[in-house]
Length: 316
Image 1 (tube, rainbow, N blue to C red):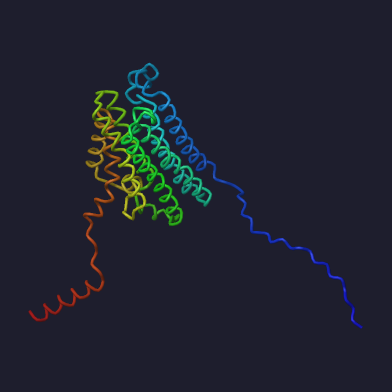
Image 2 (image 1 turned 180 degrees about the vertical axis):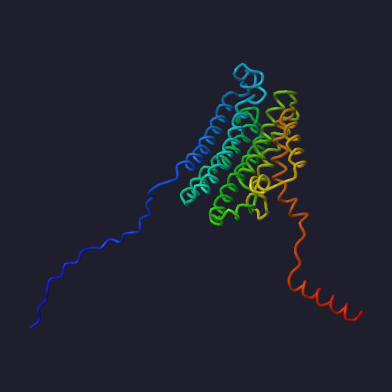
């Protein structure tokens, strides 16, 4: 006798492993959010600059000559906001490592803030300066093609910044010794080089009213942005400014000389000094690669050692 029982089958739902964030480090997160807010503020300055159409240059900032020399236009204010964002970007990682609160959440949030502050915002600032003087419908066909080329070059900068940040997240190590050098130009360094030229452009139109110089600077910005983007995705080595230069001991005379030169530059030509330093750092990667001597391969070195020993034996 065969008894057949009723078997009830309930559908089993496959539950994926949920990763829930329980807590975050307060100070590093606030610093990263400060970076993001500065990037948004720079984008807002681009909107104000486009809406003003050059009228912001005629009005004095806060009715102060000193303030006007530093913040002549909305674009200049946006550039300084990017520099402030780089300060926040340097603080968040250091605060996290000092508090031993480094996490995947902090790394992802930092990259999201960086793509805004050092990717989109600098490209928009450069686009604000390089935009045509006339409205788009009134441009000639050649001028429209030129503007499209500039737009593509600036878009390439943003794409390279995103690729650079994504690659950094994949290859990043939490060890402090891994932050002595970078592979490829860091996005804050690329943004600093780009917006420093924007600052020089705003200073040129404020002081000398040299239309030719301002036009050339504006036309060069998209090509500079594309070159900086390629440096970001390259494998060229760049040293960490804080970890490589400011840490450790250095001769007293060298410290005095560096401080003296920086003080003179900051007082006499501040915008030009910032541009020179930022562009020099961007160019340091290709220059070091050009003058760096490659080490000899092990096989070649062994053959040279054997030949040297044979020569000594024959002489002896």
